[in-house]
Amino acid sequence: MKELRLDQIEKTYSKTAANKTESFGLRSIDLTIREGEFFSLLGPSGCGKTTLLKLAAGLLEPDSGKVWYGNSDLTATPPEARRFSMVFQQPLLFPHMTVADNTAFGLKMQKVGKKERLEKAEAMLDGVGLKGFYHRFPDELSGGQQQRVALARALVANPRVLLMDEPFSALDPGLREEMRELLGRIQKELGVTILFVTHDRDEAFELSDRIGIMRDGRLLQVGAGTELYEKPVSTEIAAFLGIKNIILGNIGEGRFVSADGAITMDVKNGEPEGERFLILRPEALQVADGNIQVPGDAIRIKGHVLKVKFLQGFYTAIVQAGNHELECQLFRGQSEQLEAGQQVEVFFSQCDVRFVME
Image 1 (cartoon, one colour):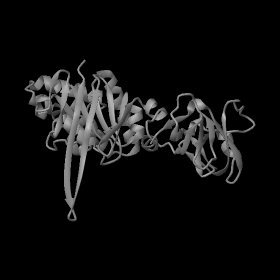
Image 2 (cartoon, helix red, strand yellow):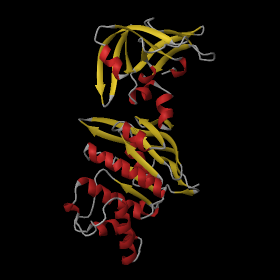
Image 3 (cartoon, one colour):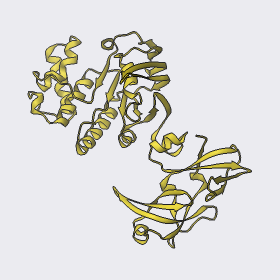
C-alpha cells in the first residue's frame, strides 16, 4: 500500500506584532493517509491545517519528523519531485493560456508530447464538466469554472496524492455544493488519494472517508465522521462538531450526578469514578408526549421550553433543566405543540450516553 505518512512532524513559527512575539507550532503530528482515501483535516482558521498540508507537499520543511510515501522518505525531496498535485483556494490559472493549455501545463513540464497532453487535458476537462471550453481563456470563465480547470490540471498529471487547501471557500453556497458533488464523484472514479483542508464541518463529513480534527497545532482525534460525532474523545471536539449538550458532573458508586443535581443516572459498570462530562447528542434527547412511548429504562429529565427553532428542515427545542439549556430535536408535530414556558419531560437512552474526562 502506498500510504502517505507524517511521522512525528513538528514545525514552529514566531511572529512579532506591536513589539510582542508570539509562537505557533505543530506538535508531534502522527498521521497516515491510506492509498485511495479521501482524508480531511478539519479545524478552525489558524489551527495548523494548511501548514501541515504544505509540509506534506514539500513547500515547507519540518523542524523535526519525516514525510513518507510508501517506503520512500520524502522529507528532503523537493515539491516538484514528489509527484503530488495541489489545488489552492484560488485557481491560479495562467491568464494568457487557454483552458486546455492551462490543464496540460503539468504534463508539459513532464515532457509529454503536445498531441498526447492536449488529448489527456481535453478528456479530463470533459470529466469535470467543461467539454467544449478548451479554447477559452480564464477571464471568460466563472469562478466555479476556473476552479474546475484547476482541479482538471491537478488530476491530469496522475498525482500520487492530491492536496487541496480549502478549494471551494471562495465560491457561493450553490457552487460549493456542485463542486463537492463533482469532487466526490471523480475521487471515487479515479481512486486518487486526497488530503483535503477545510474549516467546514458539512464539507468534511460529506466528502471524507476519515477526518482529522485539529486545534492549536494539535491533531485531536482521527476517525470516520460517524465515529467522531458519536464518540468524541473530549468536550472540545464535541463542541466543535456542534454538540451543545455538555454537562459537568461526577461519577461515584455507579451513578452520575450533574454539578447542579438536576440530572442523575446509573452508569455502566467499569465507568471510571470522578469528575466527568456527560455528552448528549441533540437527536438522542427526545421530548416525551402522548404519541411517544418512553422506554422503561430511559433517563428522564424535567424542564421547561425556552424556545423552538427551525433551521434547514430540522426543528429543535431548547429546554431549561436546572442550570442547563438542553438542545433536543423534534418532530414537526411536536414543534407545533410546544411554546416557550411550557413544562416538559425529556428522555434519552443510556446507549446514547458519552462520558469524557475533559
